Image (cartoon, rainbow, N blue to C red; front, side, top):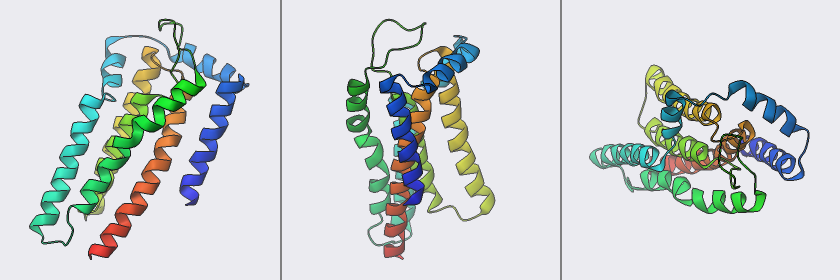
Amino acid sequence: MLLAGLPALLFALITWQVTDGGPLLDADRRISRAVLHPDRLSELLSDLGNVEVAVPVLVLAAGCAAWRGRRAGVPRWWGPPAAAVVPTAVLPAVIVPLKDWTHRGGTPVMPPGDGYFPSGHTATAAVAYGAAALVLLLWVRSHRARGVVVTVWAVLVLAVSYGLVRRGYHWPLDVVASWCLSAVLLVVLRTVLHALHRRRT
């Protein structure tokens, strides 16, 4: 579980910097000022992290995996698709308390308030699209197709992340922290999916 330990440690470090006003916040503000440029494109990119967009993609991928498993006569074909939706379903129970605890304010272009750390949109995109990719990879055999699945996931997450920072919806550290948190959840999901896959075969 080393793959989960490293992002968890980095998440703890970033959270500590945010809550204690550490030196990383100076770099955070500089990067935000350099990237910040609210425009229509950045808003559209950030919208890819909306629940209304990301969750249907996950449900479609899980549905495809379920259909393939049932059609192939795989025992307990419903296991991996069901497991794939769990991290996204529990994500609010992780993100919301963290937002309430850290009380981080938004960028200068956002209205007064707090609850910006970590980024919920980034976590939703990373976990939902990542879970969709992981459950599809159970059925994708060719190296080229597997590369396409992983690349699409990475591009979607990076697009959402860039849009959020450029639009000013989030500070860069809000986004990076969500990457770390999402990595932990996806590593756990990957372990579960592979265990279920080995058991069914």
